[in-house]
Amino acid sequence: MSFLRVQLLAKNFISKRIWLILLSLIFLLMLLMEKEQSFEEIVDRTVLQPRKYDGSWRNLTEKEKRSLSVLGRILYLEEDRPPQQNRTFLILFWKYGKYIKNRHLNFYSGKNHDPLESCSVKNCAFSFNDKDLKKADMVVSHLHRMKGVQDLPSTRGNLGQIWAFLTDESPFNTFLASKVKLSDFNGKFNWSMSYRMDSDVPVPYGRTRKFSPHIFPQEEKVPKRRDKLVAILGSNCGGRNHRWNYVKKLNMSIEVDVFGGCGNKTACPGHFKSDCPAINSYLFYLSFENSNCNEYITEKVFWNAYHKNSIPIIMGYDKKTYEKLLPPRSFLHVDDFASPKDLADFIISLNKTDEYKSYFRWKTSYEILNEHGYFKTRSYHFCRICEALNFNEKKVKQYNDIETFWSQSKDCSVR
Image 1 (cartoon, rainbow, N blue to C red):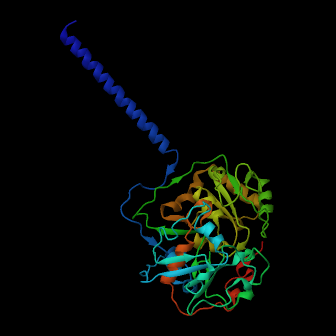
Image 2: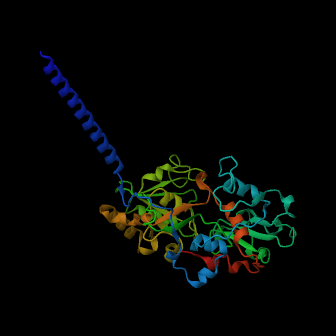
């Protein structure tokens, strides 16, 4: 065999190897692209500059806007934050502070965390020692644990000290330890701290923010149609709104998988200390609150539905309230359906077409923030207190009739 022929064969062999390598790379790239497209992307990937937020979408009335504290206007109307004050504030969590510390500072992890991490201000110190009463700028009382007005300090520690009540539960469940009349606390507190946006210190379970999609499009994905449609997680098998009766009736027309203490305990413990991965694969989640109260929107919506990329089906207060606090066209409300069967029929029909994808379009312009410390996630309770002390007006204020702000009759409904 001549040298030239050997050289030609060698070139052909090398060329074939190069082509094989190129074809292999193209095939591998196609596989990666196919995997990436197993979910349908609905927005562009381009990132241009930091997000600009807009709070006008809530369409709050002028009365509702006036009811907001300075901190409330920052959180819900996206107003600018004033500068941090040039001093250090001391906040005392009175008597039952260990419960707040365990959830909102340690996140049930057993580890101490920086209470002001990711906070806009840093000039606060926190105490759980009642001996610091005289030095504290603010005293926070956790109503859920209190046995009565006798649990409060006998007198204020210093002139100008702010007393605030904290409740993360609805007016039906404000007190856990005993049956206490809320009116007993008339004239005791200066500030409120609750999930409601008109609180002096708003601490909602989660928040919705709107941004400009042309400034910073959010890369999000819409799930494909799923075989598993409806799930609910619960450890409290009661509720004044008869939510579990509704679940039973719904289950007669469509399969509902129940996890937690009210269903499959093995798959999920059903408590906010630990997450429930079993509900990740469902297209719809029954976000049925234990009370139908104004703005009482919990992790059942923000975490178990939105965080899991599911569509929440809500049982709670009136739909108009949710429209001010949640992304538009992102949820279903049971009040829109004449019966559980009608809801089941709608779910089934929605899953048969691409129409269900419209319930995920909000992700191009809105984001959901979880801020309440469940499932070992970050809580912003300590941050919000510090921000309120820095930003809120210091005019004299007192809740002389606390039930005009917080009560079952004013804020809640029974189905």
